[in-house]
Structure formats: structure tokens, C-alpha cells
Image (cartoon, rainbow, N blue to C red; front, side):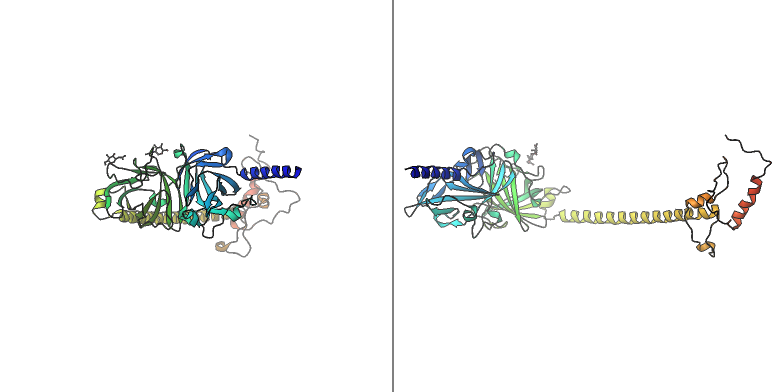
Length: 432
Ligand SMILES: *[C@@H]1O[C@H](CO)[C@@H](O)[C@H](O)[C@H]1NC(C)=O
Ligand SMILES: *[C@@H]1O[C@H](CO)[C@@H](O)[C@H](O)[C@H]1NC(C)=O
């Protein structure tokens, strides 16, 4: 009897601990917009998704999930109830491999293989076994065919749309006119404005010029949520700022595949997420393709629509002018540097000659033209024994050998004056 009781406690402890091993970020509470699911509601305290997710398996489904395992970058959620497969109970799992963008925005992958018994969603279903009480990420989050870059999903906390804005990727940072193709018809064209430049985190369309809702937004204003890249292809997720969305005409999220060729930018759009393998020039089932041409600030749309794009020419001219300016600057700096060096050399050789003039010391056996000059030393200073105007004669240290008198004509001339200055008849110069 006691044994049964202990077993019971053990079971309840195990169940409890396995259900409370996750601590979701504090912001994961309340409503979030999910590019894959629509609106999702989190209950942070119970590490639970209470609505928004639904996993269907034939006629059964589960819509509430609780996080059962947490690992760095992963949350594993298990269905709160079973789904029935061939009259058996199955556990259903979603593994979230996530990356934080801001406190209020994340992108994630569903990190499972596609499951034929769950509408080919990336999910994991497993026959219920009471003996299985732990769900390691190594088993439940290890797809043999992981999702590719563009299969990411984005979630943004409702009410924090302005806290999550990110910059658009470089090819989209501009002010464009664009041609939209829905699979059969071209719209917009030369007279249109798609502006990602005024605010580099916001796309703004001028629907007065062309009213086609290229990114499934009725107000034509969207925030960049994030972008991922693979090679030179960008996958960009934008969040529609409309107060309400009504699919299938408008959507909260749109995913774009973006490439650039010269100054032309190619975009394919898809409501919600990008589809696996989405190419920038191929229309998806629910999306369209767009060709963007940047406006130049030195031209206007009428010039551009005339078919002659002067943008590359202007760019080339600016580039050439820039290169010339750099070359001129380099030459000027080089010349200046060289001149400075020469002046410095002249000055330093002047300085080197001075000691020779003051004490006439020249290395023996050298001609004036190729003298080896020794720099001034303390010893040189001591050897100068002429008093100056203030009679502050430099007296050699008594124990310091006085060098032999130099014999250049100039020093002889100086020396010849010394006796006069030592005339005893001249009274000592009084100190001033
Ligand atoms: C650009 O973003 C800033 C900061 O969010 C905002 O104050 C400003 O109004 C925006 N400008 C435009 C043209 O949307
Ligand atoms: C849209 O274009 C029209 C016509 O050129 C212009 O009058 C209007 O100011 C533009 N709207 C915005 C928001 O730039």
C-alpha cells in the first residue's frame, strides 16, 4: 500500500517537473502576430500556447500546447491532448528553433521533418507511451531534412509594432517606381512610388499614384521585421501596419524574396511566409512579382520613363570625378611630403655644420665637402672656454682633459683675440 502511494507521488512529481521545465521569455505572454499562424496567445506562467496553433491529424486536432523541453535556442511544445491516428493516441509536438530579433520579435523554424499524418506540416507525432516522460531536443528536434533559410517564420508581439522595426536589406534601401505582375497583368509602372528610403525600416507606398496593394496592405505602410540572406538573395519579412487585416485581400505579414541586377531590384511576394524555394522572379500561388527601378535624385520619373536611364551614367561620372580627386589629393600630399622631407634635410645638415663653425672640429684628413660631422655633446660644450657677454664663461672641469686647440683658420682667428680679452688692465666686468 505504501509502495503504491510513493509510486503515485513519484508519478505526479515527474509529470509536474516535465511540464514545468520551460521558462519562456517574459514577453511571451498575451497576443503575438505570427507569420505562420496568425494570432497566437501565450500564457507565460504555464509556458503554454492557449490558442492559435492547431495541429490536425485526419479528423482529430489539438490546439493547446505546453513547452516540455527547453534548450539553448529551442523550445519543444507538446499537445495538451492527443490526436488519434488509426484509433490510437498520439502525442503531437512542435519544435521551435528560435532567434531573438528584439524583445518583441523573434524568427523561428519549425525544426522537424514534414509529417504526412499532420497535413505535411513540420511537426512530430509519436504513439503515446506512458513510459516516455522526457522529451530531449536531440530526439524531438532533429529533422533529417531541416528547413532551408527561406522557411523561417516571424512572430511580433501585438502592440509593439514600432519596437521591432529593422532596416531593409541594401537592395531595398531606396525610392523606387515599380511594375507589379499578378501572373497576367502589369500594373503601376513609371508613375509610382515605393519608398524604403525616408525611413529605412518602413515601406511606404503612394496609392494616389498607383493603388495596387503590392504587399497586401490597405494603408500601404509596412515595417521591416527582419531579413535573412542566402548568397545574394534576401528573404524579407514585413509587418503590415493596418489596424485590421482581412485575408485573402490583406495580410499581417508578407515575405519577399529579393535580388538585384544592376540597379534593378526583383521581388516576389507571398502572403505570410516565404515558400520553400521562392525565387525573386517567379510568382508564387498567392503572390506576385515586382520589378523595382530606383529614382535618382538628379532626374525625375519622366526622364526615366523615356527609356534612357541616366542613373548609371551619373554614377559613372561621380565615380570618375571621385577617382580623379583621390589621385590629385594623393599627388599633392606626396609632393608636399617630399618637399617637407627635403627642407628637413637641409635644415638638419645646417644644424650639423654649426658645431664645426663654433669649435672648428673636423675629422682629420677629410675635405670640407665630405666632412664627417659629429653631433654636439656635453664634451663639446665644456671645450668652449670663451666667456659670453655676461661673463658666464664656461669653465672646463679641472679633471677633464682639454682637447688640443683646433687648427682651422677660423678658430685661430678666434683664439688670437683671447689674449686681448685677458688683458689685466681691463677692470673686471661688473655684474648687471
Ligand atoms: C520615421 O520613423 C520615425 C521614428 O519611428 C518617425 O518619427 C517618423 O515619423 C517616420 N517618418 C516617416 C516619414 O514615416
Ligand atoms: C503621392 O503622390 C501625389 C501625386 O504626386 C502627391 O501629391 C502626394 O503628396 C504623394 N503622397 C505622399 C504621401 O507622398
